[in-house]
Amino acid sequence: MNNKYKLSKLTVVCLTALVLNACTALVVGGVAAGATSGAAVASDPRSSSGVFDDQGLRSKVADAINATIPGNNVEVTSYDKNILLTGQVLTNDNKLKAEQMTRQVPNVNKVYNQIEIGASQSASQTSKDAYLTSVIKSNMLFSKGVSSNDVKVVTSNGTVYLMGMIDPYQAKKMTQAAREVDGVKKVVALFELPPQ
Image (cartoon, rainbow, N blue to C red; front, side, top):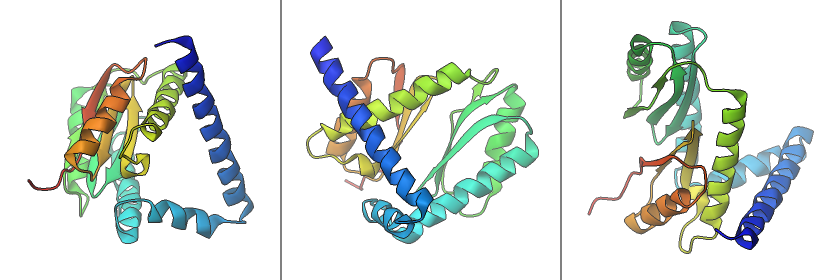
């Protein structure tokens, strides 16, 4: 990847961050809280109730895991009632316990248990993961025929997980957009594709 291309992508990432920070300031100030959340729901392929159901489900799963495995470093992502577990726990027993607790939460469809066994990742790695996620989302903006609003991007320890309800063309383009980013170790596509 040449330096001019990298600089161009970095500029887009910085501009995206500035826009997102401006939106956050509006939300925190209370000026456009309703409008901002409404816009986010409107651009999501899930129904508005589906988005809110996923937010509630995510909280319930996180609460169940935290009550059972104190001091864990498990991140919970919910998309269309499918749960992705990432992060780290110290033992395989805790990994299995986290999955078991997740499956016991009502309305969970599928569980993707991608928890790693080991110490919690460093703050430096967490920052790198956040950076990779933002670059991937920016990369998707340049992919023709796809919308980054249609997919959730989760990065954990350099591995990227993609979730969403999209067609095969979009799945291919979004996976490619994630693989092209320097620093990505692996891309795991967990898309829901329409029946053929």
